[in-house]
Amino acid sequence: MTAVHTRPLRAGDWPVIEALFGPRGACGGCWCMWWRVPMGGRTWDAAKGEPNRAAFRRLVEGGAASGVLAFAGEAPVGWCAIGPRADFPRLDRSKALVRDWSAGTWSLNCLYVPASWRGQGVGRALVAGAVGLAREAGAKEIEAYPQAVAPGERQAAAFVWTGVPDLYEPHGFKRQGPPGRGRQLYLLKLR
Image (cartoon, rainbow, N blue to C red; front, side, top):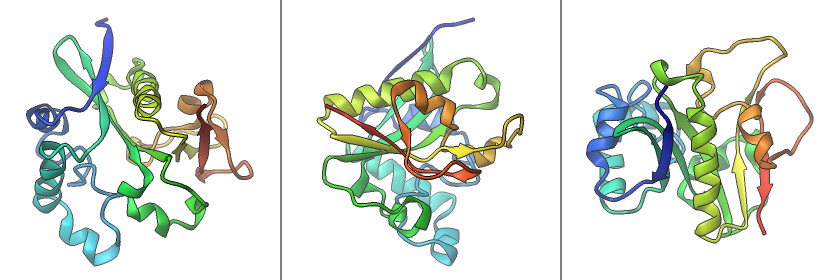
């Protein structure tokens, strides 16, 4: 098994993102734009595919996208989107995720690991790298939005792109609401 290492996204990493995400943009033409497009419905449907690809490319190449890449040797094996919460306006449209936040609040909101690399610690490495990136950037707190499932229940990967609680709890993230199923708000306060 090849060791996995992570590093922050760089402006010159668009070829790495394209190779990792493949022609479908990781998941159904998303290209890591779900939380960045303020509106859903027809606005989101019109953005899927090439419009999202072009928009995310502009963000990456312009240094406006923030995140962490995972590698096994030189091969990209994972992506984690994290950055200032203000960069992800769609979060404000989710009633389950609404809370008071400040300029020091960061959002860890998307994980992508290709099927062949799942279950090998890539997600854990990405979360650790993302927490480190936010700390170094001066974040005061980090939100995460894992998908909670019942004990023993399995979810299709398409529904756990924000991760599961087990990825966040070892880092000190705390659930902010009552236990249950579905997407939940978790918070890590940083010093």
